[in-house]
Length: 207
Image (tube, rainbow, N blue to C red; front, side):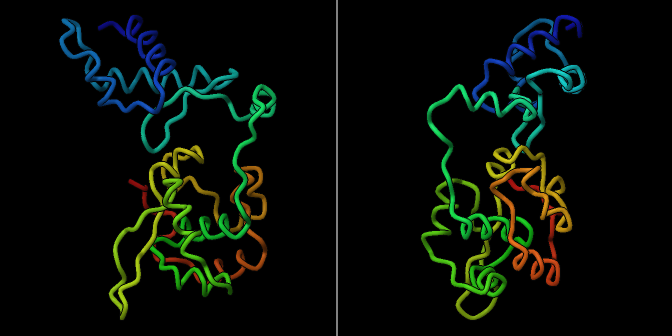
């Protein structure tokens, strides 16, 4: 299929989709067409669309689950005025716990408590799991075999990230409101996290 014809089709698919689309998913949508495009052509068109949308009110963003058409964050303040319902608000403790899991995964509940200096309730972990931001990655090989927690692809999608490497560095956390206000850490947690970096800090893509 000629690229000139392929581009508006992919653009329309991204607009109509209710979630991110992968190259493989897009390729499958052309199954049976006589001029079915190859995956490299689809990938090329996607990256061209990403560039073309950079100066628009909408943008095409690659996140963990694929490519999606979304509102450019620069204009989100006006979009929120369209809706009466406010987004859910989460406690500071829950968001600090989420941030620690993101930066130090895989991490146990006890390790999170040691960093924060306060207990972490099972309901807090349950809330993060129900939100599909956190999942159990396995169990630590120590007495009691506590669960090891890490983030999910849904976490990356929600925070507009392709992988964990796109998380702000720890030195940037004080300005995290510019990245996403929900993830800002207080100075105490920031200092402890800097002093005790995780082995897998920001190196893995959630799946």
